[in-house]
Image 1 (spheres, rainbow, N blue to C red):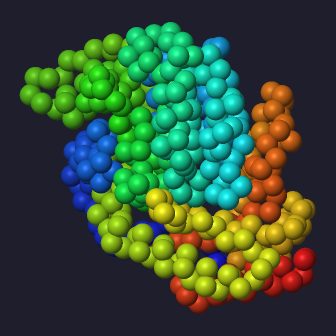
Image 2: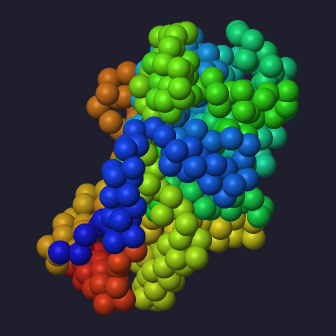
Image 3: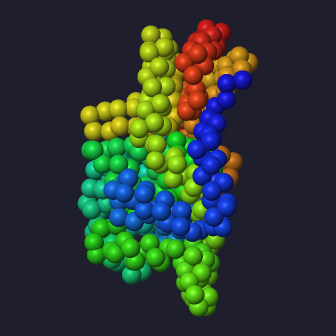
Length: 401
């Protein structure tokens, strides 16, 4: 069976994890702090906080900004449930909008139509590693400054809607020659096992707040907020006589461990010159093998000002129904090839349907979803396996359409 997206775990990673275990630092310590510094250098943002998941990062930033009951957060209907769930956790209202037909990303015209006096945050999602239209989104929040109603000091300081990018897929992607993480106010990466760069579980908050914010001070505050509100972490408490600490708020527990950071440091070291090179090669191989079949709509990976990080390979099949898509996938599975769908739109999920949302209100989202199939992309995928995947898909298409 050709798997869908196994992580790359080789001797280099295993040796670094063993070295971490032997170092005595297995929770948040020197490797986590180094990983944060290296991410900041790589992305070109101002400060970075590593956590145990991207989900935690998104929620912490919503809570930092004071998002709560009565507030609205705009996000695409085409995303994973985590993007919406964190809004629910904060007691706010997710406001779903439709996406672009070509690249699956949030439609800026739909964003503008959804902005109200209750809008506190816009959460664009870089689908499959392809950046959203950040120039337009950043311009939108400035354009609508007059309608923004601040309810706390942080919101007053920003003076407008916060742009909180769900960049879970887009580590290493570029927009106007700038890397994801430095494209808007705050971006949140995922380092889950299936991501391009993994730490097994993990994520990072890339802070890039404008003046007069001091991003270093925000980082220090978030370190406290994400460790039970404790004003000293374990690393600080190891200094001689520095055992005493205080709890300054009822915080959360979502710090990254050095075991995770150890994996991330190796992954980051070889990311541009190895991981992305290989993923690009896989994408180009798929393109070459599938481009002649007129039934298959290939994904976008590069435009004049955007370059994907090749996280997913989401094809769309022309002229089919959702049921036909599911049948095609089953025929592919029957040939021992794993495929997936990214994503079942959030308004189509039972919990959100029960809240009153309907997928029928997002026609482009549904149209893309109903005919989308994601093909395997992972570091150790061979040319022979790529050919097998393509043959399995074409064989399945021949049986269904």
